[in-house]
Length: 68
Length: 74
Length: 266
Image 1 (tube, helix red, strand yellow):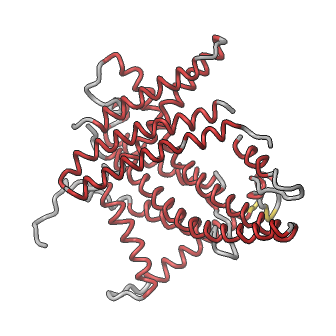
Image 2 (cartoon, each protein chain N blue to C red; image 1 turned 135 degrees about the vertical axis):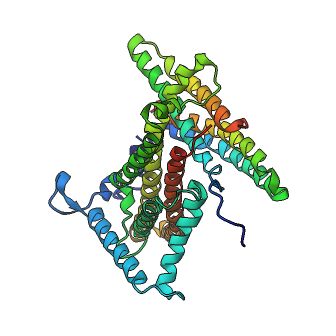
Image 3 (cartoon, rainbow over the protein chains, first blue to last red; image 1 turned 60 degrees about the horizontal axis):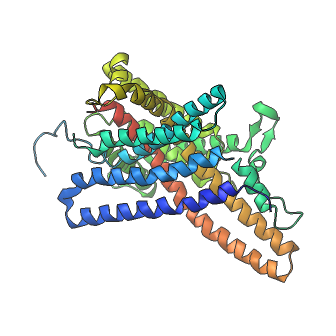
């Protein structure tokens, strides 16, 4: 079997950010469902958490092209 | 449902939700741009460590920019 | 890079089977080369004719109590106008942009759905030129609106958020420049293209692979071939969902970029 193990590495490294973003937005949805007035405050925290978790996924994407 | 003339600044109720996509584009362009600068520096100086340093620095700048624009309260 | 890897990885399942590649997407009907009239071009023209005929026919005699065709058109139009344009751009000046957003939404949706309707079965958005063309329209729109509103100099000055320490501005300014002028339109086009292309390639792989395994395989491979066809069925349903979602996201992002250049940020 020929191929590139960097692709396998990228696939495995996409599991972490996926789970992380799911957890973040689950917490956001829970918070807004319990108290809809808190939506504005929670939104900026959710976006920050999303950016941090997505940063790792973007690392994986960029490095998959670097290590070809 | 009679509450007078429509409020001219009734606002964009869902604009803030759409900021998430702008965050994505910041997160992509940061590492790519600084990684590109690092790669050009690598070609010029014949080293090999500027590309990952550029990617990390670019990601740091991107996260800082996202925090300034969307994380703090205006 | 990744497509060659996909091709070579999938080559491991028996000789004689040709995996679907990007060359399968180029189907010229007349002539050949850069001026060929290809199948996606014909399908695109067909879709424009179909949309025009449907929209005109259902709104020609608009009644207060709508018939079925008029109801479909009104639902789609109300969805784009209220749910996307008014909520994102704001109730002050969103009416100017509703034609553009509605056109994009209906065009992308119909062309995506052509990917799973049997006589046609070719998602026209899987050729990169067409999403690029749509993105160019949105790109020129939001840049022109932003620059006309505050002037070119102030537009560039507004790119950097206020209140930053002065030594970091020369680092942030090129980053904002590249984000606004390069990354945003690029990701807009690539998101639509990538989703349509990958979805169609997956369907091709499962269907041709299933057919090959059923015809040429031993008993174990024949069972796997049936499983491959079942997988293709599931993926077709998933593909329909993705097509709706991609049309919606493209229109949503176009509205967001237009709203971003209308609003005085910070």
